[in-house]
Image (tube, rainbow over all chains, first blue to last red; front, side, top):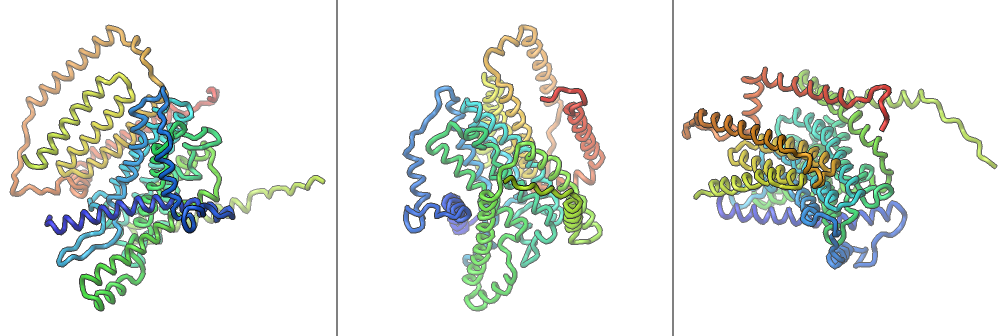
Length: 383
Length: 172
């Protein structure tokens, strides 16, 4: 690798890393703004215009709070827990392609941390490691509620990882590659995977909610049952790391959903934009500008999914624990296996939209069962 | 020394240290965490051999699923130091004998085994990548591969049978 390529790559990795942290930081602000909007109130509006400096104030508060370690806790593991959580959260954005490529003289450098041919498996591996931070921290606190939260987190993550993996397999069968960049490149223009894999997308999205421990799957930190869940004993920046890791995970999941199902940096009419820009501004500048437009489109999709995560959080109540397990084991796993089988048939007989058949059958079944269900008798109001 | 050699020696040192910590640690949780670190280092060795798929699968299956369940069970059991009494002299002696026999067998196998050689000029660096692995598995070793999947299915059915609640069982 030449020196200029190495320097550009290094700058790119630092920028992507910084952008990840910045977006996670402002997700905390956006979450409260969205919550305020949904609950018809203002949300943070004191620190700076529109509360724009609120994350900085929060970080300052977190750093200056007392860093407390319970006397009966296992000290090293207590510190290791939040470190593992934030480490695994930050690792997974390395393989996401954020754009096509940057042209510098004759070099073409992909806008991506590192391109490996097993990208999606890397993401899957790192996601499956994320649970260690919660488990180690919850156990080391030496608190029953923390331990219960940790155990819930572990069983939930393991259960939903199966549905998560099986829904990806249908995508892998269609594209024939494990590299995220190859998957994104096959969705060139408007041929997004969403149109071929609607069921896989829904399963993947729900499992992503469960893997991020977001509402309606935030049983590990269920305040009404477990005080605070796995981070009951944590304070100061250690707690901050746990909360921050959740927002980074949210950003990374949104980026992966956008890349796998919503075409990543692809958008309709991208070839026309590229030709017009390279034609009018020259090969290098036009190419880089077209890449920038693609990256902006990708970030638009990511922001939409982050908003979706928040929207769901402030709309839906939490599941009960047995409902969560039934949904994961008895609904998503059989459905995703069915999806894999139907996608296989579709590939064999060259029917591109085979997965829609399951969706149509499911919708008809749901309509029939709701039509047949006895209508609840109208209770006369007591006077 | 080349950078890959330095990486190899560093990884090997960490692997050996964490593997010995697995057996010497007093706390079972520390032991499990050291085992996870060992699996990580083994994945690092796979990456040095350019077997990325094996490295990722090793992390997903062992570090990501099996060790989580190990940690899960150990947390539930909440082992304390009082359990030391359960280890009688006979169990310790039996453990030493079994471990020693295993060591002898391993040494014998590695002495008898011959190192495979390769020709650097014709060697393809892509031999460990996922495409080649899939072709080898589904062409040359299709029957053993399918038999292994049947074995896994049988194990899964057995686990379901053991865990199934029969009528009359106490409802916990």
